[in-house]
Image (cartoon, rainbow, N blue to C red; front, side):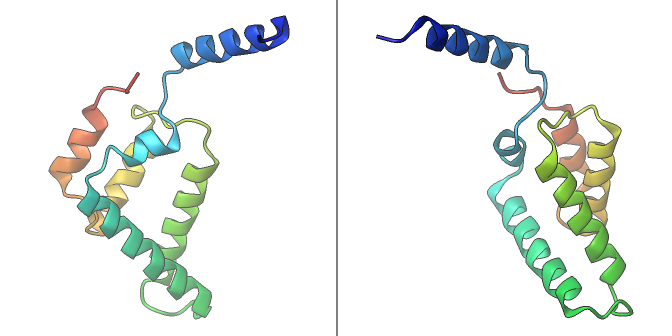
Amino acid sequence: MNTLQEQIEDIAARVAKLERKGLNQGEFRLLFTFQERVAETAFLRSAEALVSAGDTSATGYTEALAYLTMIADFRDAGEIFLNDPAVAAALDFYVVWGILTQARRDEILTLATPV
């Protein structure tokens, strides 16, 4: 049998989940199709390799660095809110980089937050 403290912590965790309005990392990632996630992963690997090479004059270096910074920001975020202008801007980059189409970007931003 759980102690009173464990029961209180369990109830607090359930209430916090009900109050949450943002997405966690996994929920956000699952808004993308498998093919989009594969494309994003390939872009990530390419960006990591380009930045690791250290040639700051290489074509695409600045974009790769911006992408890696953006990914780090998302990983550090406790929750992701689809109405956050930073999320829209990040998805704009995904369109420019060919990871998403404009239609998919717009669709993702209009999806309801999973419960």
